[in-house]
Image (cartoon, rainbow over all chains, first blue to last red; front, side, top):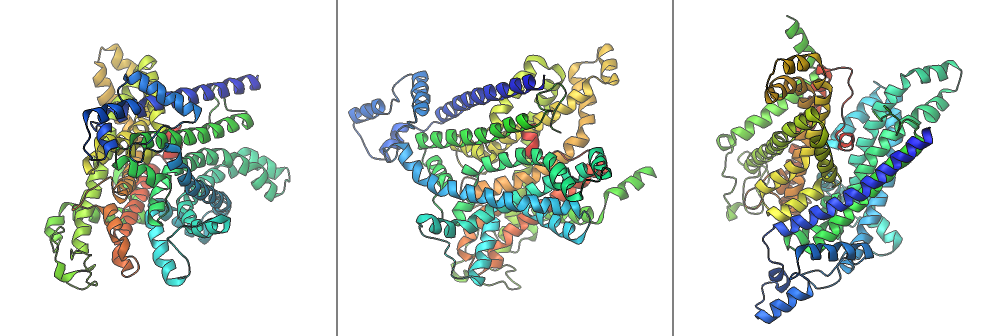
Amino acid sequence: MKRKGTAAYIAKKLFGFVLTLFLVSLLIFWLEHLSNVDPVAVILGGKRASAETVAALREKFGIDRPLWQQYADWILGMLRGDLGIDFRYQQPVWTLIAPRLGVTLPLIAMASLITLAVSIPVGVLCALKQGSAADTGLSAFCLAAVSCPGFFVSMIAIAVLSKTAPSIRFTGSFSGISGAFERLFIPAVCIALGMIALGARVIRSKMITELDSDYVLFARAGGIPERKVVFGKALKSCIIPYASVMSIQIGSLLVGAVTVEEVFSLQGVGSLLISSIQGSNYPVTQAITMLTVFFFLLLTTAVDIVIAAVDPRVGKEGGSLD
Amino acid sequence: MTDRKKLSGFFTPAVTVSCVILLIVALTAVFAPLIAPYDPLETDLGSTLLPPSPSHLLGTDQNGRDIFSRMLFGGRTTILGAFGIVLFSMAVGIPSGLIAGYFGGIADRILMRVTDVIVSFPTLLLAFVFVGVLGRGLRNSVLAIGIVYIPMTARLTRSLCLGEKNRGYVEALRSQGCPVPRILFLQILPNCIPTLSSQLTLDIGYAIIDLASMSFIGLGVQLPDCDWGAMLEESRSLIFTRPVSALAPGFAIAITVIAINILSDGVQRYLDPTRRKLKRSVLRHG
């Protein structure tokens, strides 16, 4: 019975994933064509051109074709991994994005690992010592951290570290794993801070409710050691809302890290998106937008499916998460 | 008597301090032209990068503009912008949420599908895309972020409306032939306001941060105007020499948003001590 409900739920999630991606692609394509910027003008970049050149360009970039055909070309190309050719440099879009991913993906990975490593212990500690000085202090810190924009945290970090640790470099290129670690660690901490605070708050509030519930009382009464009750039983239920919140946070980072990358002069995916938006370079904007939404949906859907697989309540009539 | 007793329960020390802070922020935003000692746009190349002094409380920037005056006017832009975002999301989100919740069926399916598409974008990404289409600037950024905020408001209103529509008073009104718009806006909506108000207060805080991010990236407020986000971007070069003046707009953002968070928590606790807070991020996929 349970298996059937879960399988149906997972199938529904997967169908929703594909359908949403399709609708998103329509929306992105339609939005770009709403704006009144002429792609040919962008391609020419202000240079004069004869009517023949313009016609040739229109043909080369497929702008002369009917809209539905342009959409079909674009989406089929995407499915084959061909992101198109950009207007400004007339290069394959992928060659512009790939080096940026080399910066942003390690940054996201580091920020996520730091978040997972810190937020869970902090949340559990606050819940266990509810009302103590440690809890009050950490909770106040978390409130402050969720209220500060990432770029502001980064600027504080630079202001403080440039005084206390002048040997740290905040600009320039880097290479190799140790170079990346050195250069990306502080930006990753700045990104992680807000997520740690959010995650710790989720764990704390859920943990407090769980520790107050009947099954915990029963486990304690049965003589199960407190450590096992907290980490073996109560924490399990906390992980579910925590995972949903975190998948949304981490999924947003591909572009969401842009303000922090800006402060630390990192050439990430976000800054490429911003410059392509400002330059009306649609093929790049569309490709990055699609990639980001794909990454975001993939992560959130995967977490939903894993939760459904481990949590018997999901997919059942009347069963829901919070 | 009971009202007074209840109100004193609302004003805990933290909430009181937050209210005072928000009042000060609001007043300085409204009366910025009267309080500001200098014109925020007036450049004076004879007095650039002055350190803080009694005549320039936070010193001057690279163009000789008084940073304190710019903070006051910048706050005005930030606060008004954030209100604009939330008001816009309410104006669209509340009616559509009520209609979807009340009628269900096809209206509900359409609303949920549209909001599904919007929430499948990370917040800032969609705002970036909209600004790419609409063009840069404060007004377009407010509109873009406002659109992104609609699903949260609409879904919350919808779920509250679902809870209300089967209650006795709605059935009674319907049987009397009360017009549907009247039921929706004058009977159901008032019962949704308590929960909505706590969430919308919180949204103003998020709106301040998102709008500041847009300006920081250069898609929001355009020169020579400023808001707190654009000011932080401008002052990046001052960060080593004059960190306090450079970071002042950021502290303004942080303090305002912390106060808003505490106020929202307070409203929540006051209205319903048992209900847990609806986290925005949970709500997005709720």
